[in-house]
Length: 376
Image (tube, rainbow, N blue to C red; front, side, top):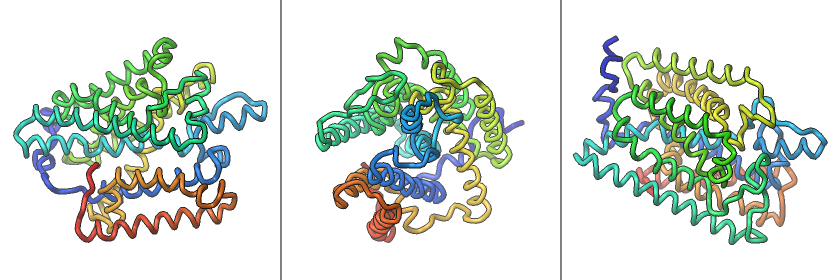
């Protein structure tokens, strides 16, 4: 087909400089509210062990079962909270390369853009490091007491966070951006190559000893995240093609098929194929399939009903994603302090959560009216 000859997305789709995607902003707003829910529930309820198995992190599920004398992991390898990292990278990948292409046309200086991309991601790493330092200072004993994941006890890096991981993933991708930013097939090939390499090295004990340290899997997981982000960039190109419903639907079905294949493989504590704290390739494929399926359903609804219209206030949250995520960390710690300890009642917890949501919307009102975007 002619569409697949050049591999380039329609120029009209790439040149919408200054225009925002209302649908993506709506989704980002929903993610803000979901991250707020997960943070408030985990920290205000007294930790992940207080949450239902399907909601809690896999590591928390492990601890519960080890306490009961059962050693093992979830059959599906992750709970609802475990999807968080992939949700974040999915949202980045959906718009990242479109933004880069738009800015390259606007500036007329692609090399300068790549430098600023690199520096911006270094700055994000710095923000994550500072945030971790503040969390340590606010903690009771000055350290994070628990190891990152139970299979390699003691793997703790104090100044590595999810935000640090986002920045480091961007740094890793910088050399590839000039090669893949314009074509869907380049993103697909690069993604599959990186994920293949990650599959080969992710279970290497020497590699794990030095790289797989820190929250969100440390440096090692960022290799897998880089492959996932490129794959989402490939999906985003399909969404902007002619006959996008056909191509994006086929890719989504293929991704679900890959997940079904992963589920057919043996999944044991000794050789985890699908395991969140280890950030295995199975986890990345599975989480991508789940997140993309939800996104696909919402994308279809938007295509025929909303037609890319931004939902007031919700889109304002999405346009200022990082700003509101910083508030999320604050509110998750404030609950136990305000209530003098873990919140025991689920009714009180829900009341606290919706009070936080109301506060978010109050802040979003002036941002929505004036179309303000707070860039961090």
